[in-house]
Length: 370
Image 1 (cartoon, rainbow, N blue to C red):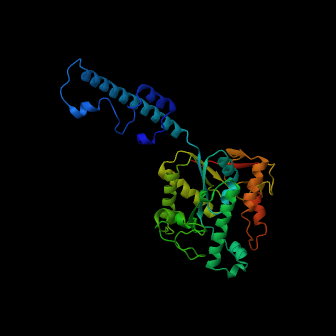
Image 2: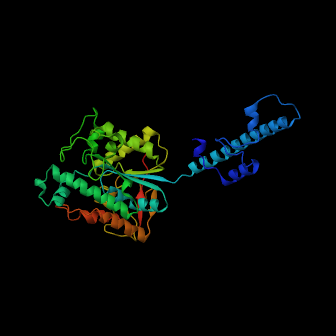
Image 3: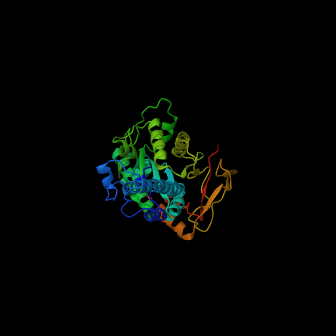
């Protein structure tokens, strides 16, 4: 931090004006001064002479100026560090696929943006590995979709995420797409030799995004290979750059392998950077079934129930350690953001209603086990 970067308090500026004559406190440029001719002419000065007295007065003035500047700098630094310690919240929501962010965290996003926090949604995959959805978007039978149809699905889902984020008050650049392969996050995480994976649907083996540059291309000028180290490297870089105070990611008990792998990757990246902020998980594919009650119920909280003798959701404490209330208006905004992700999924007519069942009077979160 340089002196020029410090916004000096008004009181300090006023003090400078009071202690220093108008023609003397212009630091950093030559000014007219009654002492200028001393430097130019040189020569010995006799004690008690007018020139000697003027010189002594000049020295006292310079000492006063230096002391004042040190005082002002101290005040400015204190103000700067105080401002830094009270910076706004910075929240990052990690979504394995485009739509998970609003299913689990629409209320968190909405409330954070409303109070002035910085919010970034990070879509880890391109959302290009859902054959029934690709068929619905392409108006084809599932067994006839090809790579171009999966790429079209990717673009469709990323546009939906941007629209949904706008409904919650976010901007287009609040969405970051890493562009890793949908359906293969688990394979990437479990890879022991860091081999490059080729996505079976798009036939791609490097990151991409359809509505903007993927993160790695934007930052480094070229895409990243579908490798374990690439995913972890991008996440480490993001956490280091964004310095979030809160992060959210799907829980490791989630029934979808991409959701579990998203948790493992984010957890490992957080450990690598020494992340010390709040770390929360949310559940989408809870087992053996989730959520309860079913349907859009904005006036009811989430519930734990027994399904075939097993307590749902499996593997998580109930009640959850964090429950964030939503007002009816906020619940309605969440519903609209989920509806922005409506996709005609072939053979799954209940798909949209299942997503809308996450509209409750609250959102629930867990903290990872140590």
